[in-house]
Amino acid sequence: MTDYRTFKVTLKNVFAASLVAIFIFTGPTCSTSFALEIDDLDDDKPEVKPEAELKKIPKKLVPALPMPSLKGPKRTVAVGKFSTIGSFSQKYGNWDIGGGLAAMLTTELLKSDRFVVLERAHLSKVLSEQEMKAGGIVKPGTGPKLGQLAGVQLLIYGAVTEFSTDDSGGGLSLGVSGIGGLPFSLGGAQESNSGKVAMDIRVVDTTTGEVLESHTVSHKVSDSAFNISGGYSGISLGGNKFKKTPLGEATRGTIQKAVLAIIGTAARKPWTGLVVGVDGRDIVINAGLRSGLKKGDMFMIERVGKVFTDPSTGEVLGVNRKELGVLRLSNVKDKLSFGGYMPLSNDFPKRGDTIVIMKN
Image (cartoon, rainbow, N blue to C red; front, side, top):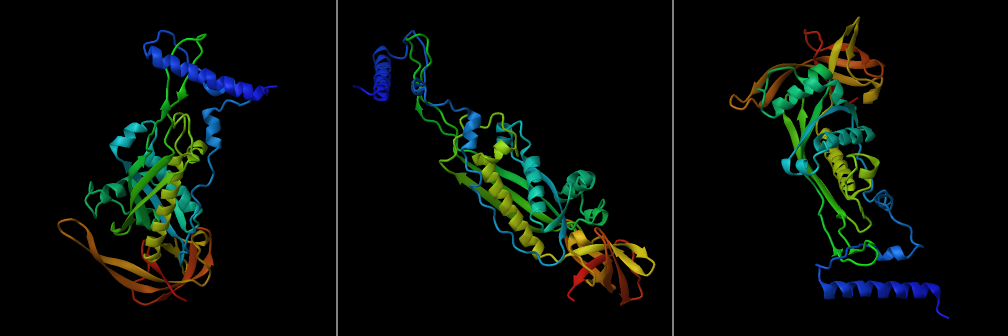
């Protein structure tokens, strides 16, 4: 006796072959129209929704990269604007790509536990002016210095230069007609299973406005495990669904590489802080436990003197610094510290003077 499932599969094959034959002999101008997925004849197979497709994607195609250690206190950083190019800004018109990636970078810098990260919302006006300086819109040497106003040592800004998928399609769609008005198709278009993101980032010394280093970072993901039937429609940038897409995984990889590059730059830039003021016999500075300072740490207190700039570009070429004395911490709070002062000159420290860590 013929097995029922074998009979059903045979019937499906005969039915599909008959429809293709109808299409070949009657041509695309055939008057009746229907579209039925052949697999719909198998009532044992559940329908797969676009949302369900996202759940099939492996959660960690991009493994977390190990973060190198950063000697000395944590550097205080702020992430500025990230610009985007017009082409993919138009393609993903409802996404703030530059703002979104800047926010993701801020989060990853915090998670690295290597930096004190100040939120842009608290520094928006100062950051805007600093960014205009960096972009040449405002003449260097004018306006407030971010380092003096907020204690930020490094400003990170840049541009998203690539944010793309390789769109692909395949299969055969049959617009044939005929039986009972049922819809039918063979194959169909499928969203790309790859994504690539690239960024140019710059790390700026907020005291001088000097660009310390520039980095280009990128990451590409391509894996057959990705299968997003509904594309990126209805997915929000940075959301949980986005993170499980090829573009989301590429973004994750790029951001991780950016954090590694920033750690490398910070390691080559000595930690500095600022004198907040004087409390009796103690000097008060703008860093404490959250920056990794501890009782007994020693610093040189310096005063910035004449700043030498290029007359044509305004670029800072050098700075004269005068050593005032040595500070040894005796009381460390969360965001500030107190310490005794051993003078090396007749000039007493004042608010805004720079502190540089010394080896014990």
